[in-house]
Image (cartoon, rainbow, N blue to C red; front, side, top):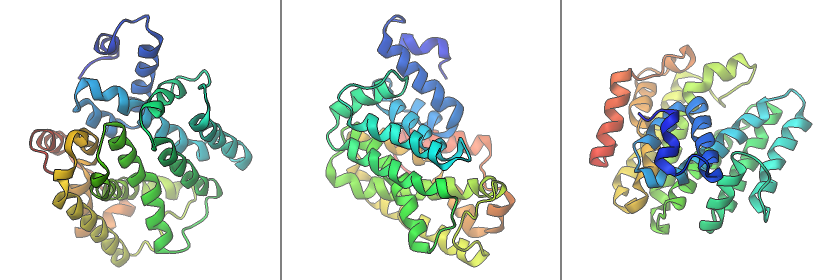
Length: 272
């Protein structure tokens, strides 16, 4: 795994401002989203520069609702990112600059990212989900849309949207279920129904999304490296299905050997 000192060598001269901001994006993702960071390292070098800013942006908007107990401050942080998405010139910000460059190269990307920002507004209120459908929509807007945005930045064809969204939904659900204990500790009611029966149904829904993605993985094409972010979805969702109590216990996890092996396997074979 390259060290921070190697980022500039990977992307160009150390005195190049764009390289340094990409380095900052990579470092941000490494600290805040290590699983997605590892998946991106498995992608070809030339594609990483398109993924880091999107994943760093995702971290920024995911954190925004939690940085303050004052809803207005959280709203202002989210509005900052909505403004970045439509600005003719990006503000001086280590993520905004690289992100703005990718927006200019990828038609339709700004609209997807704006959808993600809007979805994060519900986190500010800390209100429980009113229905299972509302929860499904939240996972769709935050996770499925993120994976499709990353794929679009890598040049995915429109025919691949269903597969990428299905994989993103499954991966997003798996990640969310792992976060349930932390959300509960924040006095949030994270699930519409947290009973073992409901959790098993939810995990089965995630596995069904995964099956859809598998059947259509041939559509991934050149954007396949974006799909690597979903490499843990299957094993984690199977754990949740087999033993739903692991969700509340916070024991939904893979061993380091299994994690690394699953990522290598997906990278080499394209299977997940």
